[in-house]
Amino acid sequence: MADGTIPPQEINILQELGKWNKKHAEAIFETIGGIAPGHFYGPTTLSKDSTILYLFLPAKTSGQITLKGLDNEIEKVEVLGNGSNLTYKIVGKVSWSKVPGLVFIDVPNTVLDTYMTVLKVKLTKPLRLYSGKGGL
Image (cartoon, rainbow, N blue to C red; front, side, top):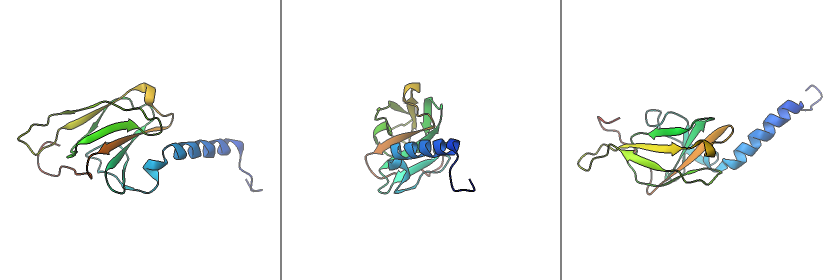
């Protein structure tokens, strides 16, 4: 406002944003740019050592989400700020091919954040993405 005060509705927005940022700080601050849209359809970030991939899911995104071209082993997938471990499966990976399978992550409604859910995909080694021909 002209007198320097903040309207009550804007105070609420700033407080909610502050709570969300605090809950998901690990995926926001001191991270680097994530992966290209062809691998995941949504915003992503990476830990500085590239061993953790953060997937940002818009509100109400539940069911199976897909991660393509991940040429890494996954240690675990959890909901950031919630701690719930999620199940995932890799489909289409065959031993004789260099093409990685598709990763399907099950995201139940019970773990969704009000605004945006963040998944923490912990990798056993720094991120490697498939960049060859075929399979994506």
